Length: 217
Image (cartoon, rainbow, N blue to C red; front, side, top):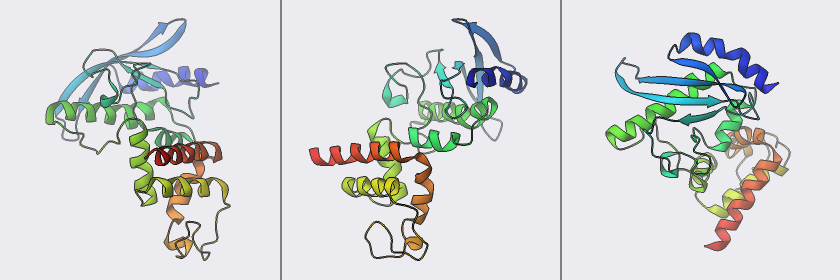
């Protein structure tokens, strides 16, 4: 189903991005060509050669993006997976939450690929990411969860993730599951509602990851 949907949505992308083309690669269609990075003031920044492949999980996961023109260093520090050379456009929790209800191919290019390429360009030109990108790998997970859970303590992050994964949604007037003694609605309600859709399996996996890291320190 995912690949058929990917195929059906290609024409809409080609209509909006005329420098992209549908080509065959290993018996399957992909998007390939150029994407221009132009900011909101119509200032041109850069042109990238890209290839976009349907992923196994599409439309509930992002397609796979490759920058093939050699303008982005193929290292993790530049948000490139060094094993596959695909672009790390978002950290996993962000991707899953964005795609829970599905994402169209055109939405992916417009809402995800373009901002990613603009951020890469801004870093090359100005020396930093304009939109405050999360770091690559485990550090990015830490930055993401610590921001949402309002704590930098690794063990506390792990406990909170485990709680969100295993505790039924508290009543608004209940005390928060974090043990603070504060009512849930004033404490971690927004965090719970934001992260619970990630699902029990992933939340526990990430809780274990943070427990393991904290135990090594």
